[in-house]
Amino acid sequence: MFSDLEGRSVISSLATTTIPDYDFGMLIAEFPPFRPDTWLANCHMQTILPLFKRGKRVVYSATKHIVHLRDGDRLVVHDDKPKDWITGDRIVILLHGLVGCHGSPYVVRCADKLTRHGIRTIRVDMRGFGDSTLISHSHLHGGCSPDLDDVIDSVHRHSPLSKISVVGFSIGGNIALKAAGEWGDHPHPNVDSIFAVSPPVDLERTSWNLRQFGNRIYELYFMRRLKSHLALRRRKVKGLKDNGLNPLPDRLLQFDDEFVAPVLGYSGAREYYKVCSSGPQLKNITVPTIILTSEDDPIVPFDIYSDFDFSTYVNLVSTKHGGHLGFLGKSIRDPDSHWMDWRIANSIVALDD
Image 1 (tube, rainbow, N blue to C red):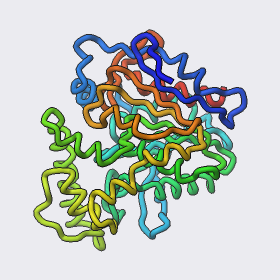
Image 2 (cartoon, rainbow, N blue to C red):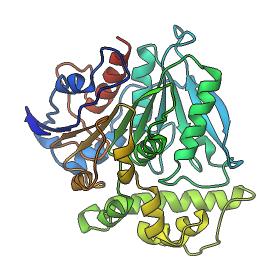
Image 3 (cartoon, one colour):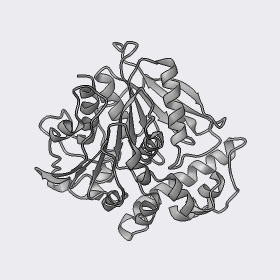
């Protein structure tokens, strides 16, 4: 269903959810429109500025835990538990984007907003990033859905009565959607909601999009960070999964083809992209899901979403502007200018109202 509501476009497939008296469709209809200031309507401003915009300082107060993964690897999670949180209350798992970590601005902001609402958050440092940089032997990639399964299982073992929401940003969103699709008709009984922001549901199309002249700045940024991380890990991590490729390519497609794919056991980038893209799994999702994206995303082309069938549980919400993980524009309802954060936080709070 396509409609335009006060400057935002919504493609919404409404779901009959497992949450009593709760309807994602009704919630989406109440989203305030996203209207950036004129000077912030540019997709590159929306994408880049939030990375450098200084908001209020959030004091780190999380407890670190190590999660042991099914393949013998490990990663670190950061557990923010509000003082008034009690056993059985909701927990939210947050997955960062490519080259991100628990300290990425968008992750910190969303975790802080949720914590202030009394919701416990688990910020995951995926393989090779954040505090997982030196303890993981493998690498973050688009198909890390088993890692999410293991984190969910770990959270469930410690808090078996808590409902769980998963929030994934960019490639973290692809991982969350892929996991939900793989669960099919047998989702984890405690996971009642998925939120994916700017997810690259077609990894190949996204990789090619980064090669376009106007988007090259993002590819340069990703590759600089990926190469520096890998160089550090090659020096520090004994037993790192590595094929010794040197020099490392400057283009993401070649990096995925010559390093990521062979190290993970794929024949090349094409097979890796095909297996690890969440798009084909969207039709299998049976957990109430919101995908939030913008039509001017310079990293993930908006038209990729129309290439896939959605289950009735998946709601795709798009704005005309917003860039990639940007959505910088204050609504009269929101206390600050991070429209994306409030849609996530308020939606999750509404689950338990």
